[in-house]
Length: 333
Length: 282
Image (cartoon, rainbow over all chains, first blue to last red; front, side, top):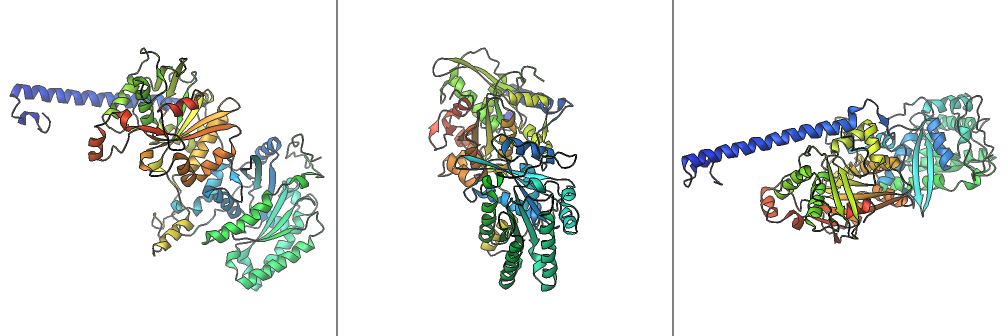
C-alpha cells in the first residue's frame, strides 16, 4: 500500500481491504500517539519529581564570589594564596581578574593550567559583558556591587602541583575611603591577611597631564593607607600597576613607568621593593594583552613560601575573626 | 518518585538537552542485548526492558530520540555478565537534560538528585560536538569580522542582552565539579562522551577536546590525582537523522553496524566500554 494515499487508491486493494487498512493505519497512529503522550507524562512526572518534588533544595554554589567565612574556610584547608586587588572605582580591578580567567578558556597560561574554581559561575558572569553573546560591540566589565569583602577563586596546576589562589573583588569606594584617610582596618579588614597586594591606577586618568598628577597623587595616598597600621604586612609583596596602558601614548607610558618606579622607591622600606607593571589586560590586540597579563600573573603566582615565613599573622581583628588558623606545616605564627 | 531510584548504585548520565545521553543508552542496550560490540552479555532475560526496547526501536527506525522519551521504568536496569564471567548489574537512570540545565541555572538540586549522584558508581558526562557552544569574545568576533573585511555587528543588533547560555566547555567543567564534589570515595571516575562524533573529521576525541575545550582538558589533567577520566567519541546514530536521504541510507544498516564508539586515540572499541570503565569494570 506504500505510495497510495489514501490506500484505497491502490488498484490491488479491494474496497473492504482498503477500509481495513485505513482503520489499522489509524489505529496504529492513535496507539503510537497515545503511547508517546503517556510516555511524556510519565517522564515529566518522574523527572520533575526527581528535581523539584521536594520543597527542600540543596545549594550547589559556584555562582557567587566567596564571602570572608567561605574564603577563610577554603584558605585554611588549602593554604591558598590570598591576593588583595586594590584600586579606586573603575581602575580595572575586576577586568584584570576576568581577563586572567579568560586566558584559561583558551588553554594553559604561563605554564599553569586551570584546575577548577569554587566561583566558576561568578567568574563567568563577570566575563559575560566581554562576550559577543552579550550583544555589546565593545567589551566591558560590570562594576562590582558587593558591599562586603568578596573573593574569587582559582585552582591552578603545574607539573603535578596545585596552587589555590583567592583574589579579592572589592568595590573601589572602599579604597577611595582609604585614600581619604579612613582606617584600612575598617575599610579593608582582609588587607592584613593578604599574601600579596596589587594596587591599580586607571591608565585613562593618566592620559592628560592635568588628571595625571591627581591620579598619581591619589595612588600614592592609597598605597600609603594600605601599608599603614593594620594594613598589608611589610613583608608581603606589593605591586603598583598602571592599568589600561593601551590608552596611553608611548611617551606618556614611559613617563608613567618612571613615576611609578619612583613611587616604588618611596615605599622601598618594605621587605621587597614594590614591583611595577604597565598593564593592558584587555585590548584589540590579544597578543599584547596576553603578554602584559603574563608578566603580572607570573608575579602573582610566584611561590610565596618566603612570604609565608616570618609572617606576623593575626587571626583576630578586634572582636571579629576573619581567618581560621593556617593548616599545620604552614608557619604563619 | 521511584523509591528505589535513589537507593541503587548506578551510573549517572550527565548532560544538558541534546547531549546524546538517551541515544547512547539505546545503543548500549542493543549492544549488550545482542552480545555484539560489547564485552558484556545479558545476564538475565527477566529484566523489565520495555523502556529501552522502545528507545531501541527508534534507533532501528532512525528516529530522533524525543526530549521526553522514556517509559515507566525511567531507567536502564540490566543484569549483565562481565567478560570474566562475573555477574553484575547495570543501572542507568534516564535523567532528562532539562534536569541538568535546571541544576546549573538554579544552582541547587533536590535531595533525591543529590542522593542519586552521591551513590553513583561513576559518571558519564555527555557533550554533543555538533552543538558545542563556544561563546566567543567581542574581541575575537571583531577580529574574525575584520579578517573578512567586514565591520563587526552583534548578533543581537546592538541590543544588550543577558547571555542565555555559557560556553559548553565551561558547562562541562561546572557539571563535573558539581557532581564529583558529591560522589563518595577518594578517587572518582568520569567518562567524557563526545556524541555525534561522526561529524568530526581527522581528529581523535583527545585532539578534539584539546582544540575545542581547552579548559576542560586542563581541568581533567590538573585533577588527575583524584579524578580518573577518559574521553570517548560516540556516534550512536551513525549519522544524522535529520536529512531524509541520509536516513534511507542509514536504515539499510543495523544500529550496531552504523553506530560506534572510539577511545581517546580514535580506535574503535566496544560500545559498553565508556560505561563499564566509569563503573570500574572496564
